Image (cartoon, rainbow, N blue to C red; front, side, top):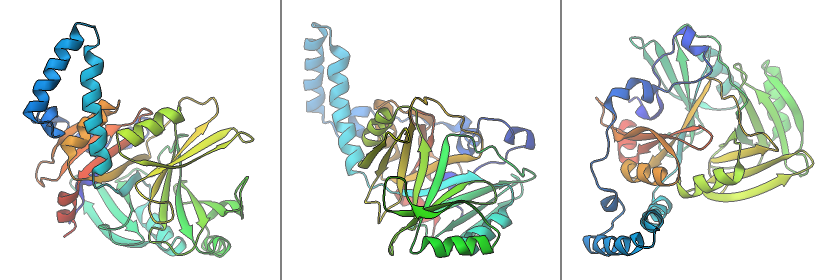
Length: 351
């Protein structure tokens, strides 16, 4: 069954050339935004007795001029606890391509992915293909979107690359060359380290970093995005998304710093790599890369936590018309989009 978590309505050729990328959810369901009718206190398990105590504290604090700080602190503590205990994982990453069959051929023959499913929506003039290294209910996968008649997109400067773990980088690069693929960095040690890597480009110009590792349950292991304030982004993803800071590395010689964020160790889970280039505060995001989808046990609580920690909700939590899958969508401080999808609803879609 089609996964609603990250599909797109088609772009017209003119719209596809625009710099800003409008997602399927925000365009198709803009008229169906649902505001949560559940009070914030109930969402995070605050009991009536606690509310009375909070009200009394607020009256006391009001007299000292610190009302907002006290009430917000209590709410944030509950929101942070929820984000950490929620059952979350990266589900898929979504982006647009100009020739779906060509891209599928490259991913399957050169990168060893499997075509998990494909669907065509002629009335909406787009086609989706899901590819990865294992079933969607347990692996991070890519969702490719082809909009009829649109052959080229602007990747922009903000998107970095996807990471794929392979057991032999040199052998993989030789295969890609034999298939006519483009290698942009030959195999060799990473700058300032010992890990063997290489970089390639797919037919649409998306970069893939090949990382030499032993067998791993999650070969599609990274999504790299550039940000304008790394410390701000780290705090946001930790508190609003419940991610862990797995590691942080500064490279003053090359004037950049990276932070690896995720819900599990890098060698077993897909992670988000945030990159800060010294002095660069903003990036052109183009209209090719779209979003990451993350599973959650409760989209309503998730949306409230995101709001409390500075995220912008672009699609209020609630079910999608027609299929009842509950989602919420948001932007991080740099404008990168994420969609949270109800875990149970997502599992039902895959049946």
